[in-house]
Image 1 (cartoon, helix red, strand yellow):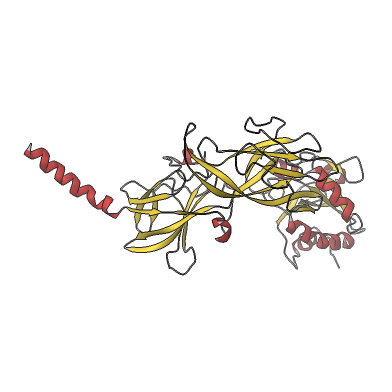
Image 2 (cartoon, rainbow, N blue to C red):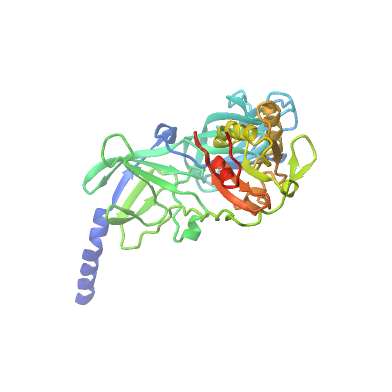
Length: 422
């Protein structure tokens, strides 16, 4: 008995420092916390379909057949937020969000999108901001609810809504005996802050839960974001976080476990084709009709430019390409500008708007936004603009990535191939 008592006392003394240092904070919901903190976001797709959610009991008068989506915020019985979109061809598009989760799509606003923009043929609606009712508890019983800020936008060419959270939890917590303001953020836009993981593989199934700390007490988030789904390092110590599902309570306690690095790993970029490599042939849709192949230009030097309508650096480089185009007239060289990772609708609209600006040959990659793109699959391109200089024998002479004002790399590459430009 005495030995058991002594062992128990020793064990208590050994673990007591860990729990003595544990710090707990009550966190208040800030409905627009991430927006006020200027924190980035991960948009979540909410798929649209003709299937009406069973929670919808009352609807507005639609102009056309609606499509529906469901966003879950919380883990309680009323966590499913129904959404309907009414998108008549040639008419005004509307969106109805059951923000109060009562099954009625007619009592949460007039359904208007806050904005409609058209950027080079790509139509975007929103951003619309909503305060939705996040429900917590279990499937059978709700224990709490809060008004949770979300934002919604829509691209006409994507069959889904894009949603991101604007809400966050805020409060103060003691670190090394001093109170600091903290901000707690979930990134799945589901209102759930407790997502413990034990491995990097498990972590891939959810998005980070971030902790930011005003460590210098200057109103800035000088520490973080720290992903607290697993043991993490804070200074010289490793902590575990215990979080209530709704984020209302946060406990940080020191641990002897190893920190798990959950920082995103950037995949290694493939090397661009090296000089001397035979350039792969391909078929693209030629502006003006018909197809165009790289091999159509065998015997000529080809400036092969990969670009997209949504890419600002690509657009910035085009006046320079036009200058090169004028300078190579009669010099056995051509420019072929292939639009990749884009939609045909955006490409066609861009051509119509810009057809008088540029005189060189444009083409569209029929793979569109698919994985089998000419740029990625054949030429190892991971970022645009990327420009290949192909010699008269169809071999890569040089690969050029990006563009900045005053860039003369194309001219220098052409000079090496015997083409001098004025």
